[in-house]
Image (cartoon, rainbow, N blue to C red):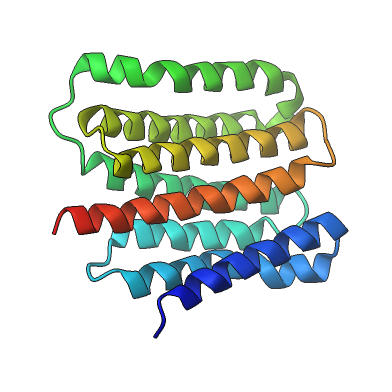
Length: 218
C-alpha cells in the first residue's frame, strides 16, 4: 500500500471538517470529525514497525473525545474533556519514559512558560467557569504537565525531532486555550476554525515525533 494514502485521507477529512465548521453544516461535521484520529492512526500504523502503545491509546481516547464533543450540553463536554485528559495522561507517560536523569534547573526552566500560560488563562476564565471550575482546572494542570515534560525532554535532547514534539504540544495547548475562551469567556466566529485547525496540526506533529523518534532509536 502507498503510505501516502492515509496521510492524504487525513488531510481530506481535516479539510471537510473545516468546511463543515465554516458552513455550520452539522452533517458534514458529524461525518468528518470521527475520522480525524482514525485516519491519523492509519497513517501511523502503516509507517511504523514498532507500535508505541502509549501513543495509540492516546489517539484512541482523543477519538472518543472528538466523538463526545459532537454532542451538546454539559455532560457531553465533561465526558469529552475526561477522554482528552486521559489521552494527555498517556502522552505524558510516553514522554516521561524518554526522560533521562532530570535536573531541578531543567524542571524550573521548562515550567516557566507553561505556568505563565496556565496562570494567565485561569485569570481570564475563572469568573466564567461556574460549576466547571474543577474539571477545567484539572484538565489545564494535566496539559500543562504535558507541556513541561516535552520541554524538559527537548532541553535534554536538543534535536529537530524533539522540537517537533514541543511545537505539537504547544499548538495543542493553544487549541485547548481557544476552546476555553470560546466556551467560557467570549465567542468569536473565527474560534471554531482555529480550534480544529490547531488541534489536527498538533496531533499530526505528535504523531510525526513518535515516528521520527522510532527511526532515530533503531
